[in-house]
Length: 454
Ligand code: 9WN
Image (tube, rainbow, N blue to C red):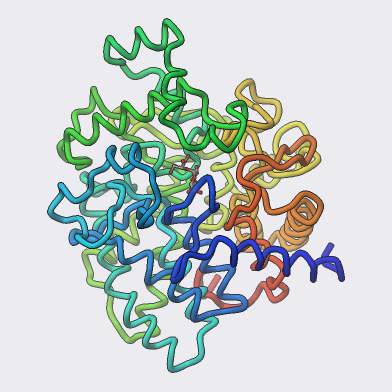
């Protein structure tokens, strides 16, 4: 429940964002994640917009420094002067002529939230600055959405294909890791896994220097993800060049549901600027909601990601199943999802919402995306519940989320069973989204991420 205590929560959250500030932008966590990450910066901008809109606008401008000439917005921009050779060597973005010259970036993307964040920031800016900000970011947003459809929806189906689990944001989520495990591995990797040598990877990892290995991706998953990225590099990370048998190509549920919301925001921004989205891109936007519905599985009453090449659904239930609520889906989809969110043995343990249902065999309360509660997912679900008219449930989840962070701190993720915090202790998106949830007392505020007429 929001009360006087929450004033101190807001103060602590701002302090976290100040400590993680690196000039124009904010890193997810000073020790663990010292660079800029795409969807982190979007969540950060959304929270910061609540109290310092110009800083939030700068956060998004800083994100666009990394945009490639082909429109791609990379999932990471490396901070200058931070020693992280392993990660930089993996990407070597400057070898690609489309990559920017003045910053080093990764070569893949992350959930497409920039238009959503831009809408939140625009709402908070004074009139004259709003127009300048939107005019600045609009062409960049259009270029990004164009890239998503041109380069990642090769068959024009309306769904974007991801080429690496790091792109989905829920990196080690069971459906992706299961599919990765089923991929044929090179002989040396089979040997390394068989002899349990994957542990060697730990020497190259930054995270396990700061956080116990039991709370992080396993060494085996870590090695597989690294090998997959190196394979994609051989094809310059270009989907159209990637052979189906050596690649992991997935029409990711959460990513595509967020794309529906982002397209909606971009349309609204265009309207505000008196711009027109060109008909080809507008057709792509129109195709995505119907294509998203193809990810619905009637027998289980849930949504799932699917393999882009075979069309097979990846039927392990995860928190991603709730993201389409925000995209705006039919009541026949809403009812079973809302019921699932209410069941203690599935998605409503003591500290909801777990990233994997608590009764699933894959559930691990403390390990990264295999079970813990993440504040960004709760924030998305709160918006989704509002979108489909479940106001009381939205408010309840909002209050429980605030109480969890109030009691435990701005951790990266939390045990849904004990409420214990894990990962980075001062995690920026937790802080930022708590601030946004605290300010969210007027849920009808028209940010543009909900459809205008229902
Ligand atoms: C790899 C920064 C990022 C988040 C992701 C989260 C984690 C990186 C990692 O941290 O991913 O991109 O090192 O594991 O899974 O969602 O953006 O906070």
